[in-house]
Each structure stands twice: as C-alpha cells, then as structure tokens.
Amino acid sequence: MADSLKLYFRYIGISIRGQMQYKASFVMSAVGQLLLTFVEFLTIWALFDRFGSLRGWTLPEVAFFYGIVHTAFSFAEGVVRGFDVFPAMVKSGDFDRMLVRPRGTLFQVASQEVQMMRIGRFIQGVAILVWSASALDVDWTAYKILFTLGAIMGGIFIFSGFFVLQATLAFWTIESLEIVNTVTYGGVESAQFPLSIYRDWFRKFFTYVIPLACVNYFPALLILGKEDPFGTSKVVMLLSPLLGFIFFFVCSKIWQFGVRRYTSTGS
Amino acid sequence: MTAYTAIVSARFRMLLQYRAAAMAGVVTQVFWGLIRVMIFEAFYRSTTASQPMELMDVITYVWLGQAFLAMIPWNTDPEIRQMVRTGTVAYEMLKPVGLYNLWYARALATRTAPTLLRSIPIFVLGMLFFGMKAPESMVSTVGFAAAMAGAIILSAAISTVLNISLMWTISAEGVGRLVPAMVILFSGLAIPIPLFPDWAQKVLHVLPFAGLSDYPFRLYVGQIPPENLWMVLAHQIGWTILLAFLGKYMVSRGIKRMTVQGG
Image 1 (cartoon, chains in turn red, purple):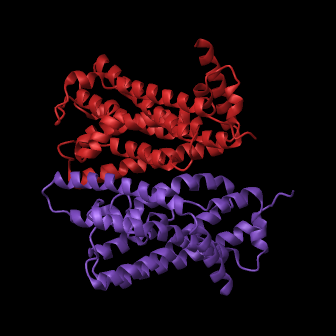
Image 2: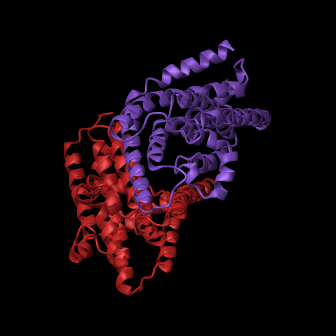
Image 3: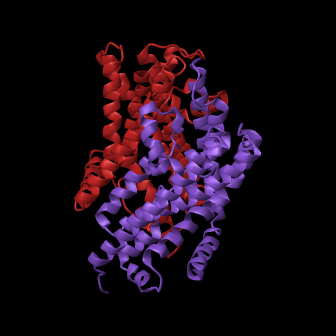
C-alpha cells in the first residue's frame, strides 16, 4: 500500500513536471477554469438578486451546496481523469501493457495523468465554500469542519466512481459515453442547489440511484441545522457521506468485471 | 460567389452525417433543459413580486436555448486548430479565395447543420412534454424566423473571429477556455437577459451576444413586440459588419507574422 502510494506520487510528479513545461498554457487553462466557474456562480448570484430567495434558502446557504460539490468534483476531475484517455487505450490496445504490470489496473489508469488546470475550479470551489462558511450563521466547531471535509471526501469518491464507470463502458462501447457525462455534469449542476427544490423523480434519482444527495444535500442540511422536508432522519444524514465510498467500491467491482471480460483488439 | 456556396454546402452535407452525435446531444440537452426549468420554477415559486418575464415564457426560452445551442459560437473549429498546429493552414492560403471569406463560409455551415439536426427533435419533445409553448402569434413567428437568420450570420462572424485568433497559438488556449463562459452568460443562455440586474441589462443589450439568442427568443415569446424586429436586425447586421472588418484586419496581421514550419 505504502509502496503503491509512493509509485502514485511518482507518476503524478512526472505528469505535473510535464505540464509545467507549458507554463503559459497551464496558467491560461487554470485561469480560464477559474473564470468559467466564476461566471457560473454569477448566474446564481443574479438569480438571487432578482428573486430574493430560493424557497426559503439564502445565497450563502446555496453557496455552501455549491462550494461542496465543486470542491469535490474538481478534485476528482484533476486526480482521476486518467480514465478520460481510457477509451483510446482500449482502441489502440495499449491497455494490454497494463495487464502484465504488477499493479492493479484501476490504480494504473487512475495515475495516468493529473490535470493541473483543474486547480482553477478547485480554487473557486474552496473560495465560495470559505465565503459561505463565514457568511453563514453557523458555529464552526471542529466536528462540523470535519464533517464537511468528510462530505467532500465522499463526493470525491462518488465522482471518481462516475469516471471509473464511464471508462468501464469503454470495454463494450464508446457510443454511450456522452450519456454518462450528462449524468455527471448534470449532477454537478443540480447539486449546486438544495435537492429539495427539484421534482420528485429527479430528487429520487440523485438520492437512490446515484447517491449524490448523500455527499451534498444531507450533510449540508445537518450543518445548516435544517430539517429535510421529506423527513430523513438525522442518523441517516450523519452516515450519508459513507455512501460515497460504497458507491466507489461498487463501481470498482464493475470495473474488475469489465477487465475480466476484456478481449484485446490484438494490434 | 459560387465557390463559397460550394464550401458551405459541402461542409453542410458533411456535418449532417453526424447523426449519432446529434442524438446523444439531444438527450444531454433535454436533461439540462429539465434541470434549468426546475431551477427557474423553484425561483418563481419563491416570490410573489411580479417579474419582467413570466415563468411560461422563461420555460419556453430555456427550451429554445437548448434547441439552438449548437448555433451559439461557444467553441473554436477543431480542424482549424489542427491546421494551425500542423502547418497545413498554409494550404488554406493557397486556395484562390480570401481566407476570411473561406473561414466565414466554413463557420456558417458549422453553425447551421448540427443545429438543424438537434433543434427539430428538441422542439418536438419540448412542445409535447416539457411545457414549451408555440410562438406568441403568426407575426412573432415571422419575426423570430427573421431574427434567427440574423443570429446565424452574426454567430458565424463571431466564430470566424475566434477561429482567426487561433493563429496566435498562445491566445488560442485562453480563447478556448474563456470565450464559452462569456458567450453563454452574455447571450442569455445561462439566464434570460431580462432577469439580470437592470444595470447589467443595459450593457448586455449593446454587446453582440444578445443578438445570438436573447433577442430572437424574446421575439418568439412575444416579450419583444414584432414591430421592433428592425432594431434586432440592425443590431445583428451592424455587429456582423463590424466583426467582419475586425476579422479581415486580423487575417492581414496574422498572415504577415505567420511562419509555417517546414517538413
């Protein structure tokens, strides 16, 4: 385990050094990401400016949801986006080489690449989170801070699970990838707001099918001291971030199933 | 002129081949449209104050935005990016047509063919299932159609300027990342321009981006009266001409400093 971790950081180091050869390009991309997400937040601000509140929620409260989901998503995107290039690896047969190396395939694909430019979105997510935390009337005990970090961790695992799932599909098809992207980005978009504002089927989809609510909506409710209008108990909310890890575990099992079924293109 | 017509129609027919991509695009856009509609519904239910746009109109506006998303100049042409990187852009210059006009014709096809493939299914789905309403009146239908034509020539002009900026490779990176966010916000695709703070609206009405989607969509829902169509068209055509001058100037500068690497 410690050995793998060492190897991972070595891979990452190589990837980062490589990207730092194009400094101007990195700065442009990172600043671009930062501004892109800043614009996203501007639209939320503009809506609050126009409507005052969102079904009883204030801007700092919504910003808390926004901050949690974007911090988690950008981190996952930066660290495990090696899965992005995976369909190409299957197509070219490069994946075969990974199968003969003495490390897990999941680990090897994940450590292919770190996307440093994602730091732009990450900084913005953290900034919004910090602003929201200071604007909110919440007594920030160590327990609450830890719980927030736990929710973010759970979120990172859920999004990583998405990326693994998407890559797994490449064992069978490359046509359906866009659909997974839709759910991923759609999930990020919708989790910027409290899930209770959506219609029933949609809320249930992101609670039971894809447990995004567990790493965003429920933990935030608990920290903001709000009740779930649908009567979820406090204990469930407290344990909900754990579902992120379980989701990832299930995805990794599906991945392993895919690897076992894998037949090389043979070139 | 026949040369340009040929370029447009050849690319147009080529782009019409990507039907599977269009289908996936439709699914994505319907999903996004649903999320946006639900968010607006929630905001509208939070207030009793009267708003500059009715919820029904906003919903229709959202679906129009999803239907015509491919028409918005939010990205640069990947083939031109490739041409600049590999140096094959030199062949473009050998062609017996002006570079600006050539690329404008390309952009015109790029902005229309994919839009055609996506807009029709989204229109049908939106009207049947998702609360999109028909145009306000017969007159506003005509106004909408005219303004969409204006939007397409404006969109192609903006696309062309973006594509020309790829000649400066460093800025290409920035253009590729910064422009989408700006275009989506300023054209009213993120939220309809009438819902922006009043001071911001004044600025956004002048910028070229309002002519891409906000003006035509508001003609559709009747939020802009049909008799104001000429103002919309003047805005769109004025900006198209201005951007054409800018684009041609950039081409002349770009060609002078361009070094194509041998090999």
